[in-house]
Image 1 (cartoon, rainbow, N blue to C red):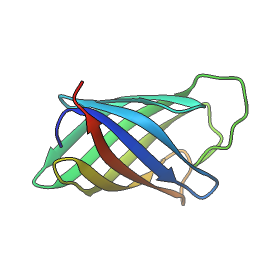
Image 2: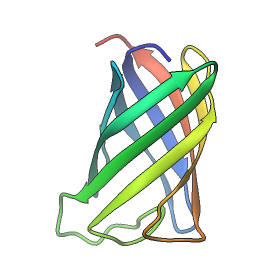
Image 3: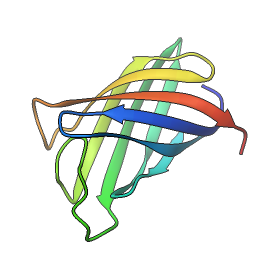
Image 4: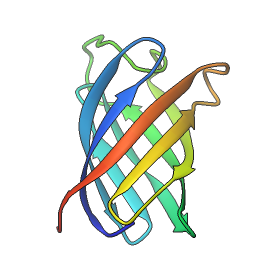
Length: 109
């Protein structure tokens, strides 16, 4: 996938929402109303893989797509194109649940 700013739509077992994500040279950085996310990704042959650490940045109890955790890891895999990806993600700290994430390119950064 190309470097840039992406919008994401996510849906998990408990909530759905959207956020902005920056993908830049193998690094992924994002935030939503409850958590900040920083991690690494690869995109090889149309397959996107990411491992991202999440950390709560507010004391507010907001609906979480996956689990109500202060810190957790998200592991995502799925098909990608130059400006889009459809990912299935798991959180090892909340086994048995999946989150679907769709990434769509917005602009260069």
